[in-house]
Length: 48
Image 1 (spheres, rainbow, N blue to C red):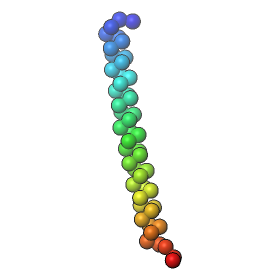
Image 2: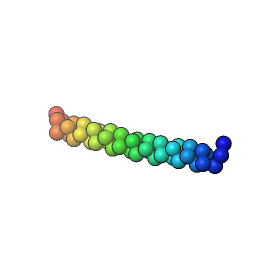
Image 3: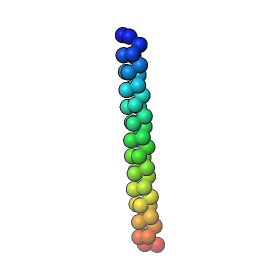
């Protein structure tokens, strides 16, 4: 494999890794926001 091919493959791999991290970070934020919403609703609807 020549240097250009290796550099190209490494660049593509890094691009997917960075995109995956951003996607997981966004999913984590969405899950956290949903959990906070559920927590707030449970506080509002306490029976004691």
